[in-house]
Length: 482
Image (cartoon, rainbow, N blue to C red; front, side, top):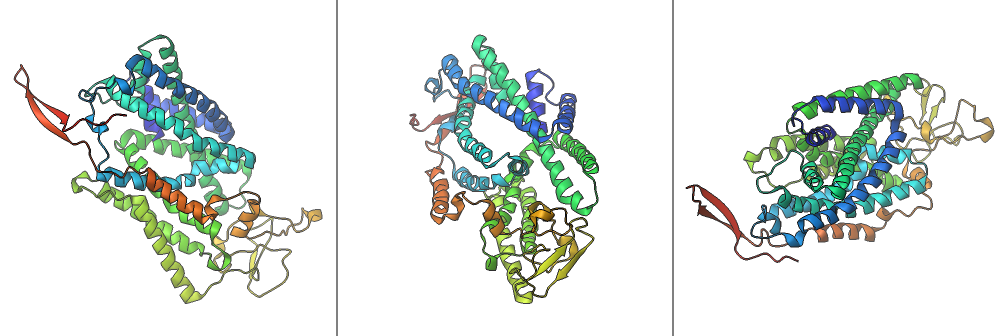
């Protein structure tokens, strides 16, 4: 998606062929070099600067449009190029809006957002970032809606630019003076923001593959070797994304439509891991089974049904339906596992002994009950093959502060209890059932549930002097404009 955004924005700014691939290849090469040299710290710093610039420009643009084009009060209902903007949502749009509001709950599972959580300096910084993340859309959404609705009037009937945002800004810049300065800054900042977002996505992909896949498979890898593998991974990710962006015509639309449906399938793992008690915790394999089945369902359901317009698909969100399938598979898998094998949850009576210097090569299981806990790591579900034993060294706690060089160390299980100990002093709203009910109620209330497509439109044909016939849409009765 970032590749397409860079191509459309850059080519539009410099009046290049919309399909020209050379600029985006050069820009993506620069982004890759920035990622290799600066890493996540540089991305965070540049994102902060760009955000401040973008917010300032976004606050100025509505006043510029209001001055030069009159704002919403200057629009004529009868001559507006998109009269359907004055209508209420159709039933399908209302149902889709409601589902999209729910599916956006999975925003926190996006890899590059999680990565920034890990990179936060402290809890205060993380809270400040989330406050900005919650408040920011209230400003940007209004400006986006205002620019979009006014942009239809500014660009005129029949206009379909490859990048409407750039096209509207170019029209504003044509007014000269202060409008030109703001337009230039806004275009430049938006281009830089797209590049920075692409950079953070590349870093997230690199980190996931190297730390969650390559490092566990190669326990003896050195930091220098891991850095080289990370750079190769970034290069491969850039090449694949450029190819998808340039040669998959509908790629940005398809990827955008399945992004949140796919990320939503990770929500059960987070919720179960945080809030289930010891006796009710779910085995990782049950959670993985649900995630795999639902992910395959989302891809198949979208590309074989929702994407095909000829089938006139129902407004069913692949992510919502996939999440229901996910939960169903988890419940059935866990029920079958407990029926066949019983609950093997580790109530701190089964210890997995590890050697700190050779975690993967020297590991033994002790299923007998023991009171010796000084040299072990407690696993919630110890009955598992060796390759499925997670590396918990990042959560280690030395049992003897005077002997930190010892090969044997003590670790707590990566469990809800450990996570909550890290969250001590922090109020978690999701643990409050009243807050959760209010959350879902609010999403339903903001959904525009009303009679669809009101006021209705009717089409009539007008004979022109040239002999051609023009179809004009008019309202049966005028809409109420506040």
